[in-house]
Image (cartoon, rainbow, N blue to C red; front, side, top):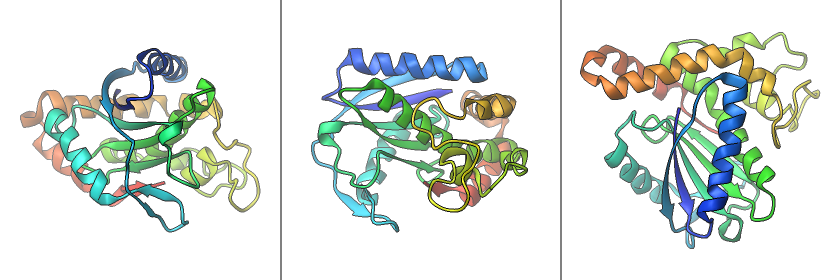
Length: 232
């Protein structure tokens, strides 16, 4: 799995390196997957915002489109899997949230907007893990056709992947046995879906390395990505 981190210039190389290490260790331990990171500096001193349906502030579409187009120009559709907008706490203007995930909205990337806590790396890790978790049902459905929600539908108080397994039903209904992810919560879920994650990331890498041998699979992935895209 390949992550491009668009690192706020205010975050030191040492601190982003520690976040990478902790996230990599978490993923390796519970899925067996290895994370490859690419890091680029980005200036977040002014990001235009607009409210979503809940009134939370997010970067505008006009801001995001050229930013993601720049990523696509360098990496293509399948050269990276996740793009992390890692914004230092001092530049965080997105009221109401600590992060956001967009899957399949910009090309086929999973885009994670994440607040970097300048005092507590555990908060930064929890935010990155939380937003990545939001993307996994779309990732697997797009590239394998498997709906991983089906593995958990016997969970008491089941609502959906996002509501139950990422948010622990915090925002309504009876409480799930799973927690709202703040740090290293709900890692048992990763063990369950690890084979599906490995297959999905394998497909994406094959599409990157041998695109002309996988034209039909590219078309299927595009269609599934469009059908299943989400922002959460």
